[in-house]
Length: 509
Ligand code: FAD
Ligand code: DLZ
Ligand code: SF4
Image (cartoon, rainbow, N blue to C red):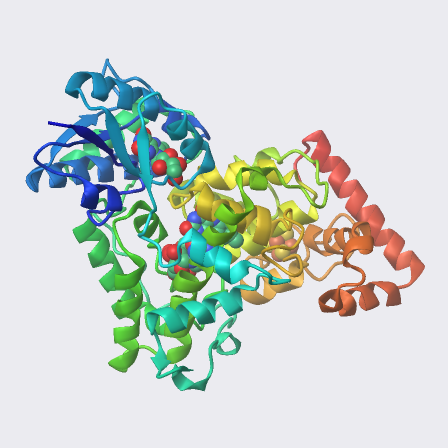
């Protein structure tokens, strides 16, 4: 009888995957493996590694309970081959299997490794997503601009989510103008649901502490969900308590509150513990029941069937060289404070400290604080990409790279965004309470005390005037820059140069 292996990777922890659907539990063997190659291709946050290993172990036990034969390799297994292809070969020899069934990995790196594997690997599409590669390509073909908003409307029509017949619920596709309120004085949501580590999690925490002692990031207290039942509880908690205000304060940032009204479910969704459909249906049900307003529910659903699916479409359409794009030719090294939070810029210190402590920062912290700074300072986008891939619990290249290389760093030359996401300190001051108590003055434009985001912003526009000067969406900014006196412009450029010079020497900024 032919026996096959069924490979399940750490971010494929769902019973619904095509490889399991195609497999036969009477004759095939599931292979799961904690391997150093995957755990170290970037210095992952310890919490990300622990989350995945614990969730993998529990998922393997669940499959065994469902009658599957599972060969699970722990990181400290003396026979551990160290890589996914190595583990497949070892298990093929043990079982006599001659073929591997798997679903497509979320990174080109691993797809290539499986394609090169001496044992044939049959890769099925990863149909945990709403939009297939072919469907995305069909949508993109012939379009001058791949704007997310048009893609999103197609996905609304396809799913029927928030649709009244063929019209969007409430008459509009997008309620963003009701969102983006500055940080409120009081947050009523007490944060995401937290789980006490059980024996499986404790065992993994000890392993990660022993094997990854140098990695950036705090491991304890570890509170992530690590199985599907817990992840569903976390989702229900968000839907009941935070979703109603998700839209209003989506872009706000507060020193004393790391999660505001965000869902904090991306790590569960990306690892397979939750599916997009159940999340969106839970949100829509809250709207239908009158428990959450349309601006919140539409905004939330847009992130998932819009942005998330769109980003994946871009990654697979653009190909393996995407992470090496550098349209603005930015060459500066990533400053050391991205790994220490040791900077006087309070917004940066807070976002990086939170990243270190939680393996989480919300979208605006990633985009308008750490991402904005890297772009303004001209940091090499590949270095920025590797940082984001390492430090967040939800980071896999298919979703991280288009967000970083495309949306945040404009390194793809404008595929994801029609203009760069840059701002001076005023935006951060409006949306957060970081500037109060910062060593820099957000109101100052030049000089030692001035907020670095202010002069770096204008220096960025000046540096890239040939590329962006004719962009109609940026015309107003360039007019403002050109209306400044020559002295003021020169003082701005001098302040930027002095700051960047200091940055390059490694001095504290
Ligand atoms: P919420 O704000 O509550 O949003 C709900 C869900 O929508 C998220 O769980 C996520 O699944 C989805 N979503 C929202 N925005 C995006 C987006 N831009 N792209 C894809 N999905 C989105 N998201 C990742 O999942 N992995 C990453 O590695 C990642 N890297 C990012 C890097 C940068 C520079 C930026 C600007 C954004 C990045 N994002 C990434 C998108 C977004 O920041 C996270 O999905 C979100 O912060 C996760 O937290 P949450 O679950 O509380 O999300
Ligand atoms: C991220 C990660 C880590 C840290 N470790 C493992 C592992 O040991 N075994 C495994 O199967 N998967 C791991 N992963 C997830 C993979 O890196 C992920 O499947 C690919 O990056 C593709 O998205
Ligand atoms: Fe950040 Fe500038 Fe505000 Fe300081 S003043 S917190 S550097 S935006």
